[in-house]
Length: 68
Image (tube, rainbow, N blue to C red):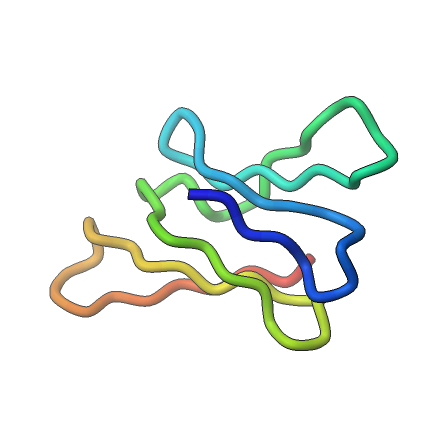
């Protein structure tokens, strides 16, 4: 699944059981620290500063978050 920031300047996706973020004007993605728990369904906060995601390995209904 792909998530696009509210301002359209970056996007996030899951690869290798971790979240990655890439700015639209860059060629390289960067792993989001602390998200190597097999995240699913990332979504940006309204201000684009945070990513929320489901973390199925953390138990029922586990939700994670990361500051960008």
